[in-house]
Length: 314
Image 1 (cartoon, rainbow, N blue to C red):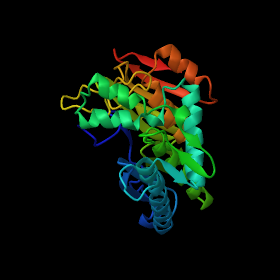
Image 2 (cartoon, rainbow, N blue to C red; image 1 turned 135 degrees about the vertical axis):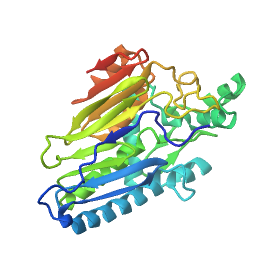
Image 3 (cartoon, rainbow, N blue to C red; image 1 turned 60 degrees about the vertical axis):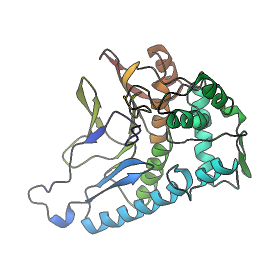
């Protein structure tokens, strides 16, 4: 089982932190790389003295740490792990309620194709190396279903044996929170990647941040990103079997792995969280369904590559 990254598709931005002629080294900004929610994280700040940029990076890292304690499946001290272990979470934080509310909205808009309750299903696939029995799938499906989750300001309660994974939306949510916090501290130019990418302003001398969208067997595509976010999903981003044939994205309707309809689905929006959730659901959809999903939200752009290598742009 390969778990190094949730997505097969990588998004890489060209470096804009190299010192330019005539610019003092103390004005080159700063860069931090790390891991958040099991994914690579990368924060690049430009257009300000290095010391100020480094202070902002410290603020961002503290925010990532705070939110990982809410949403990570990789930390035993997180609120999400506590919820899955006990089946309930009393007095959920405002951040937890906000993210669950957004997840519910994407679930409704996608006709249930985005469903954070698939964790029991994902577990049986992972434990069986991608080959669970039909009975195991049926048993796991009986524990899933977003409508079975109770969410209120006083408690979040799961169905018996249920569990949540927020990996299809939490990276974008944390990215949004980090961007908002840094803007409140005066940030004007940065590229923030906490599993998904959000661009603040633009680097000096460029109209937008250059961001690469990669797909296997297809040419890389570079887009310009300015005051927007982009999220990318691919069915084979992580595989649950030894041969790389069983997608980690599971269809909540029948419990089968996502078909390889798309090499990648990339969504642009002002919110990285929304782009994250829509790209996750979009992998399971036909072109018509993907267009209908995007049409339910304002200012959504779709940049996808079909299994055959054909572009699909909206």
